[in-house]
Length: 304
Ligand code: NCD
Image 1 (tube, rainbow, N blue to C red):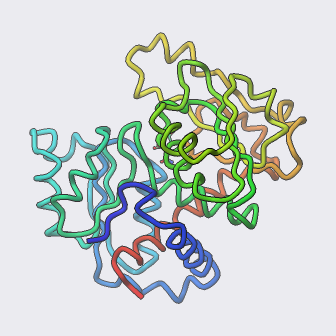
Image 2: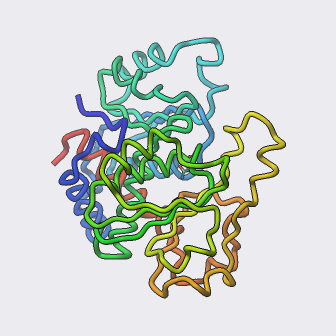
């Protein structure tokens, strides 16, 4: 059974194939509009989402398939105490493929052990978010024409930001990559991510609290939201939430071909004044997410 739980479940070659398919879907959408006829995607979202869930649903609809599911744990039987593995055993009898988001790290892996159909991790707690990474990779590829030879800055909540963890894992496999890790001391990248994907592979990296000091070095700036829902106390959140705010002023020292990414939702960390800057890629990035999810659904369902 094919599942996508961790971005490293896909080889670099498979990621290149997904990028090629996504680009082809963008160029020739009509070729794909019946590919998943009579297939059903279930979206099981135990945690809030706008882009991820709707882009999965739009992806399946644009492939001619159908969607079912829930967007709130309170409206599912988990509110009655049903376990994830029971929910998945049931739903895998109703759907051909399942995209699941859960606040508990590892829940999609548990689901994959039980499921008779492919499971896609659509975000598990502060752990991983591989389909956001697919969106990020297509965006970087389309903006830069390459996934090698890049200095990538990650800014904000590197501790709880699951999109950061997955993108670092993915980028660590390309050539001549440098990471710049920008966060307050309390929100530094977890040591397991740093050890497994940066130190282990001898990738050069810089760790700093100052965005201003490094902004001029970056080819990619990946901004993130401080993950309010993962804090244990509100005081810490309030103290850290506005640690970084990207403004046109700050961008004066950045490269003219910088690409600014953000998985969204944005709270305060990018001024809306930046949206008009041609270097702002985050709304293109959301569209790219839909095409990569279409390519992924085709791959996991083995539709040619
Ligand atoms: C991200 C997530 O859910 O981790 N959002 C998304 O899927 N686009 C980032 C976030 O919530 O900050």
